[in-house]
Image (cartoon, rainbow over all chains, first blue to last red; front, side):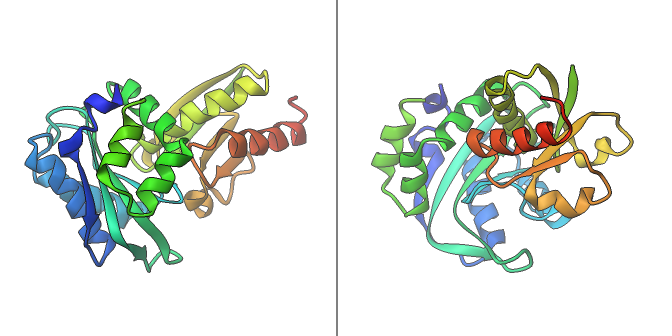
Length: 147
Length: 93
């Protein structure tokens, strides 16, 4: 169940950041603070964007930030931050994000079920509306319960 | 059976999610396919019938004519519509 991974402590709302890099650090710090990944993982998350651009905006305004799988990740994990104000990728058509999901993988496949559930969640318009409009944590948790 | 690959930067997250979306879309189109997910580095020189990726990578595959680009990687409807246009264009369905 996604609700067992994306728990109350893995979600932060009303996050104030002014650049996409700060957003990556903020969503990565949630994973670091809960001992899901090493600090170095955050650098890997930023490097992927520097190399390939923000292709990981899976759904408009929702970024799915992740670094290279491997020893920097202790277990497959997810975190979620909801931004108080949007940030933009000025280098890439000024694409906007209002929500970021942090994702750590230990290998290429073991997170399959977790991402299947996440994919279902991202198709739930109620969820998308809540996280892209600085919705409240209780409402977001209530929606996640179903997945 | 068509060999389809989904591609993203690292080949672990976004491409896997896009693979799931494609599986649903192909099922709706009653088309049997074999789908693998890969990273940008590995995909060069690979053999496949169709590559599916995000709009963000359009410029990376400009020289290929067997690529379908999607905007929303979890949107089964968008993906199905684009796959249908591609498959019909190639007279595969």
